[in-house]
Image (cartoon, rainbow, N blue to C red):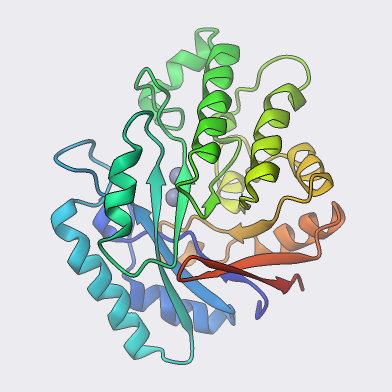
Length: 267
Ligand SMILES: [Zn+2]
Ligand SMILES: [Zn+2]
């Protein structure tokens, strides 16, 4: 049972690579004893953009499915959010999206580098093998810092995503983390421990422990999310994530409702 925890990073079949409708996730959340549940499917873009996000015309259905879950499980607080890609120069669209529903939060994500490379897509894994790890990491973290400073997001997703396939640059990694943590601290933007990393080749939560230690020292707030793409992934790894967060000194996690942040003790 996780009454203190919310799982705010949950996908639906509307992004074309997840299974489980909000009603099914809500049933599971009640079984797990989660404090809150929130949906954050990949944000629609104007026109066709890629094949792994919600279509703009599916937005009413998305909201309707979340409302159906709220009606069926009134005892559970169910939040409405989106996982929004930060794309340099296209931030205005996120402003437009904000006006289209009563969102509880927007999660900021960097999947795309400015040159169009998707850091976590298997079709680009050869780039890591071909000796571009340092270059990809550099571009990624610079983009991530711009995403944080854009002020468009309530909290940030999976901070060290480019380690997904297990490729990390040589030497210390603090040089990548520090500018982003400074941006998070200055803008008071929380980030998530995303337990999906434990299910990927890197076999480690996003972000690494060192990032968590530096973020805690800078007083950056934290959430714990599963990034579930299937019902059985809801709340996955939460006990381990709580232990990890506490071991670096965190004592609370953030909640969101209507864009307003609050905090609950980490238990
Ligand atoms: Zn993501
Ligand atoms: Zn996600």
